[in-house]
Image 1: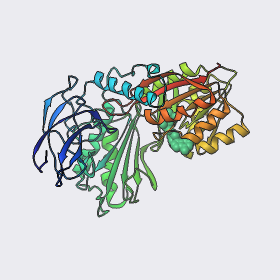
Image 2: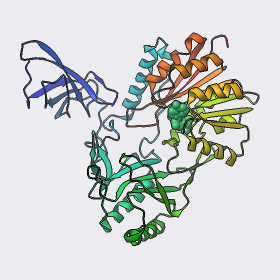
Image 3: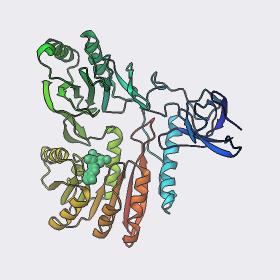
Image 4: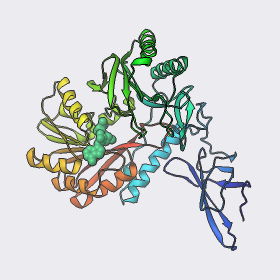
Length: 464
Ligand SMILES: C[S@@+](CC[C@H](N)C(=O)[O-])C[C@H]1O[C@@H](n2cnc3c(N)ncnc32)[C@H](O)[C@@H]1O
């Protein structure tokens, strides 16, 4: 088959890639008459479907294209409820029933475990949410040069989809976000242009505590909110405090850096404090605009409960929480063990973890701002070895060097909290030569309608 630009092709989706897109392959003849494989990446399709596509560049080895028509649908296909689904890269599986998504996530974890020679039957069914919408407690929206507030178009960081709604953002934060958007339009303020580096407003970050109800609105702009901006900013303060009394922190950050990140050179507190209070499992946390905190608090609570259930902390035991962040796992474990040491690379998170421990009347903790590899050596030397070790690394995993250090230190129980089944599998395989055996893996869905899946796992020494 020779594929011609603009020709309609029928393709069968055999699997999904790591971004959640359907994958198909067709064989075609090149100019020399040889058969070559053309890999098709088809967003918004599902495994087992037959779709009709038009390929823009058939001479390449692969092509990404949206389906023109679904000829045979996966039985779990549903209508995507969000008006932005076609363009927005936020939740790519809105067209898949929640049960279908959960089954796929469980299989992903099983396959990862199997790929390192472990038993896939140790993997339990993924724990989902009763309501899999409006689960995020933090969102970052971007301004277009015209001042429209929205989300990036999938695969195009220069294009902003003006926001009408967002079905995964916390319910109250959407209303407050729309109010800021109206204010920008009312005053005709400009957004930042990433090409010319002109314009005023760059991002709006919103945080909402589902427990305390407190909201933080953080505007990132290229100038301070003074001079000719002062009266517009006064108006923003008035309308937010009138309509949204739960906004306990209204911040204006100056960011002139060329990098497209929500960072601050100078923070102005327009109203309230520079942090909000949140709670998880009865523990109180202060969250600043740049504090990492679990973004799905309902499911994060399940992760903490599972970690406690698997780790079985005892009051005469010592424990290390590696990659501890602001102490989401450290605090509930510290309340149950003799001593806990937390290690984390971001200094502000460690400062926050120390403060959170004290705010919650926990005095048996040591927190160290270090790279995991150095931190674990230092803690072993100065503080001693641990009975329980909890490891919760970023998506890239902890890596062999860290895992081998953990294995050599022989904690009785290792609880691994993962946000990437593939790096989780390669990490835990490193523990096998040290005599550790995987006991149980419990996937938890923290990001419904997206490809991500978290899990909590227990490993113990075989003789235990
Ligand atoms: C998945 S988060 C977990 C945070 C925390 N356990 C929680 O639940 O809030 C991973 C954490 O690892 C930290 N981190 C990333 N690379 C690191 C490294 N090389 N050494 C130590 N910590 C690191 C990140 O800053 C982040 O806080």
